[in-house]
Length: 408
Image (tube, rainbow, N blue to C red; front, top):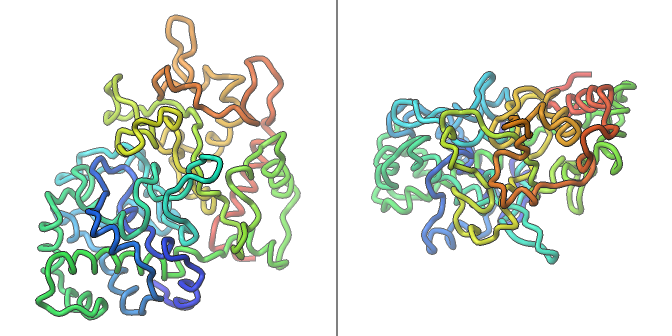
C-alpha cells in the first residue's frame, strides 16, 4: 500500500467518481443484487473529501482479509490480484466463490485499476450508455458496489448485511475502522456498514497502486524512451479507423480534463464473443446479456442493449486474461485475433451446427443484430481481413507497452 500523493489523487475525482470501485472489490460475476436502499444510495452518492491515510490503510486491511467472507476463505484480493492488474489470478478461467469455494462466477473479475475517472451510469445526449461499475454498470459508485460480492452466494456468501456487520465487528482492527470513520463503538449497523464501504472505496481510489501510470507507454509520452518499430506499428494500427479502430472505444489520448490516456471511454459494446464453456452457463437456455440482464434488471426492457458490456481499460491488459466478460479467450494474442477473424473465419470461434456456423452463439437469435459491425468487423468470409497476422502481432506488441512497472 502506498499513500503517497493521496490528496492529489482525490482532487482529480468528481463526486461520483470518488465513490466508485468498492463492490468491484471481489469481482464482476455476482448473481446477487448490488442495489442499496434509496437512503443508502443518497448517502453514498454525496461528495467526498480526500481520505485520510488512516482510511486508506484500514481499507487495505479489509481488501486483503479473508475473514470478511462468510466462510473466512475469500478476500477481495483473491479475485483481484495486484500483480495481475487487480484482476483474476493467473490461470483462473472464471472465479470460484461461495461457502465452499465451489460456486463459479458468471463473469471474469474486471481490473480495478484506473477507475478514478469513471462516473455514474448514464445515457448521453445521443442515447449511448456509459459509466457505472461492473461489466453491466449496475452500480453507480465504488461505495454502492461494495455489497454485491459480500452478499452474492457465489462470492463472499453472506446471508444479509447484518451478517456482514457482525463479522466486521469481530475484526481485530475494528477500532481502527471506527477511528477512521469518526464513529463511536456504539454506532448502529447501518453506519458500520457504510464505514466498511467507504474504507474500501478510500483504499482503491487513494492508493497509488491502482493508478500508477508507470508503463512504457507513459514513459514514451513523457519523452524518456521511444517505441521500437513493432510497437510503433501497433500503435498506428490501434489508432487507425480503417484497420484496428481500437481507439474508438479504448482512447489512446487523454480526454478533456484527463492528464493521461485511460484506454477506455467507459462505454458499452456488443462484441458477440463466443459462448462461455463453463459449467455455470452449461444450461442452453441461459444467456448473459449484459445491460439488459439477467444480473442487471432495470434495463431488461431495452432489447437494443442486450449483449452490451462495459468497455474495460486496456492498461495492464497483458496481465488481465482470460479475456472478455465471460473469460472465453485465454491469451492476448487470441483476443486480438478474435477481432481480426470474427467475421471472415467464424468457424474458428463458434460451433458449427448441421453444417452452419452458429455465429454470436452467446446471444439469443433475436438480439444478434445488436452486435457491432464497424471496423475491423463487418466483413464476409473470404474477404481480405482488415488485420493480417503481422498486424495482430504488432497490436499485441503495442498492448504490452501498457503494462505498469516498466523500467527503461
